[in-house]
Image (cartoon, rainbow, N blue to C red):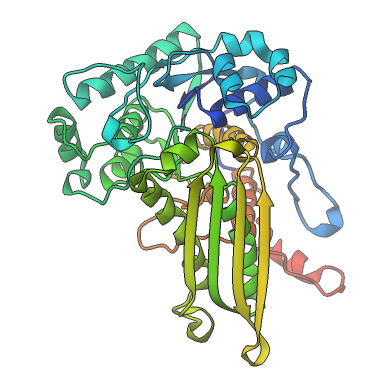
Length: 446
């Protein structure tokens, strides 16, 4: 049975936290270029990917955007917050991700996109200086200013719907605190300026309070605290996160399943990166790096399940490093040394050198998440959107459920969710062994 999905009528407002960052401006410039027919949206599932419907014999592979009601790129209206007072063209030029010859084609549009003052507290991002920030007597007041920004943006632009996405810097590592347990304690904490309540939590609360789907693109502790999870469910708001899965971790979620599928053992996995943009500078601080490290380290244990495969995976050593190296800018380089063993315990090695562009990989993720989260909200899918785990290093998940990190299982889950929303049967890949597709036909009977 098809789930009731409201059509994407009217304009969709996109609110970006960290509007002037490299990821945000690369996403904006690219989306504007695609809208003008100047570029292709390479890397975007919502724009380029197909989805199989029915059994293989039907040979039915529509584009996702034609299969289900995805918002049109021409209906997106952009705004957001930053701690620097400059327009998005100036910021994109500073980031140096895209060539000036590409930026100039969308200069007029980028120049018109200017951030609202952001909420910033130095201790949460040690290496950045906030010069364009909101002032308030307490954190509750700052959150209310964010809510007013959301309301004004919606009204002034005659918007039908909104989505908010965190593309800001990685905050310091925070453990769980008792004030995060329920919404009453959290609200009292905001009023009392509790030191453990971060800016990203204020943005999350403001979004949920305004009925706006929220996406956490960084490894910060924010939307997944119990108080905000429950708040989102009560407000019937979709939330997703966390930490965009772009380069090295994407590789891990492909290679680790391969090792496990072939029952090859793992002795050690050493990963190191060099990165020279603002993200690299922020992560040069040990407290911010710790947040990123926890996110990156979570992948292998979940995939390899050492508790089930003691002989193969119980003793592997996993090390992750990120070094700030200004000459590289946004052009990140990741090296992986993987020590594995096979038949009779004989040793082998894998070496992977990924010279990638961090913001180029992240930009289509931002686009897809915005469009899919709008779809989720229009489909009345509240709370954690586990079906979007495909896009995250450390995907949010329900309590007492093991997170899924295998990239291809995540993709299957994403597409099966789309099929379910349209009342189509999920794809299980049962094979009929060439006998008139009997198994697939039996599957369609249930």
